[in-house]
Image (cartoon, rainbow, N blue to C red; front, side, top):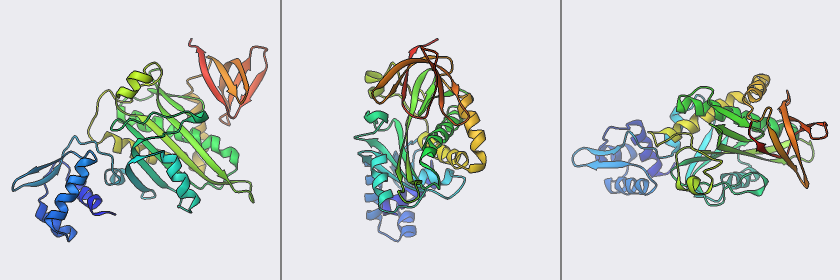
Length: 324
């Protein structure tokens, strides 16, 4: 842990209370000048830290800086290794590189912003700073490649639960198969699971689970995506993104547990945003209209085409063509 992270950890533990520079220096075994430099570095990253003569440094009660130091105390189990960084190309891209280098399961990368955020079908995921949560989790499940669909489903349920805990509105979110979470008819979260196969076993070598949440209103969403996307919260609130990150990780732990699989699938199905809606299905070069029947017990999307053929989809893209 870097020195500035240790400073932030102490300030997080005393959020809303002043800690003297002398006390910080003594605890950390460094000079007061070194402490001051760390505080300035944290401020440059968005930390709302005030300084008062004869009182010391204080992290504001309503600060919403993303930090591992702010997330870890909120976790129910100490199983995740979390790194929070200011900016990356894509948390999925960074974590895939780490996975290929042997990083352990439950490694988590969180960024304040992404310069090349990744969505499904090669699309860009808008990642404005100070308004979203962009995180990726490394999993090494002993499972077949087909299990990646369940991983995405489990993540969607975890996000729904954590989002509703944060906004205080039970049953306010829904899931648009396969990877989007909706609130009031608009997208608040996109999920991208990228996996690598173990050619010898035919199973998954690893899966990188990427989760991007629009937490607060942003100019990027208003100008480019206002018709389809919305924020989870109407305005910034103290420590909300750390709470959301911890909530998602806490829920994900349970959702991925084998004994909870059926419960998760049932909840995933009950939260479906598409049941009964007319959609356009895109799979590779194939494109056709259909009507959604339901999500089945295996997480597949059951649709009926215009010719009356019932199909079960395990992959592909669907867009709503007629909101009923």
